Image 1 (cartoon, one colour):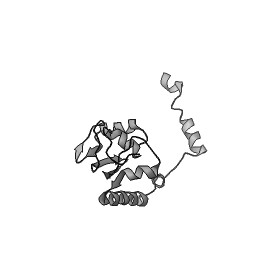
Image 2 (cartoon, rainbow, N blue to C red):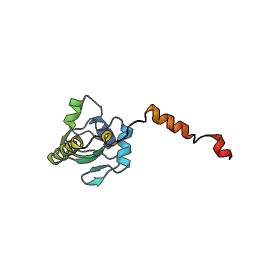
Image 3 (tube, rainbow, N blue to C red):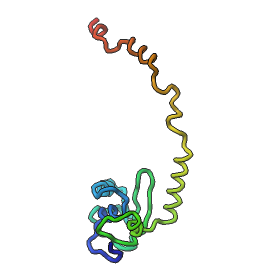
Image 4 (spheres, rainbow, N blue to C red):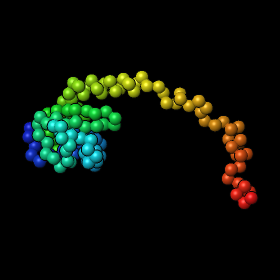
Length: 138
């Protein structure tokens, strides 16, 4: 892993090497959809990365801001990948707040009042006979 200046390191490759996305194709898709910005401007996948760039990207529903601290052409272990960037304090606070909101949100399954149909309910539906050819032919 290079921590100095690596000439010609593409944004999509850096995002993949820093383990923000599982594949370069996923990184390129997110960049193409305008969900990645560098220094406040929408970027292209082929943009060359530089140390000190501020990268803003969306992962799921959470936006993250990171400073580029290293460049690498290879994807290494997560511990190594974390040395390639430094997350801003505002981004960390926002991410923790979003996680707390998800934790406090009600369980979606609790909003279902009836739940799965019982065997008796299924029999009633079957007796309804909505797919019967008799009703279509009359």
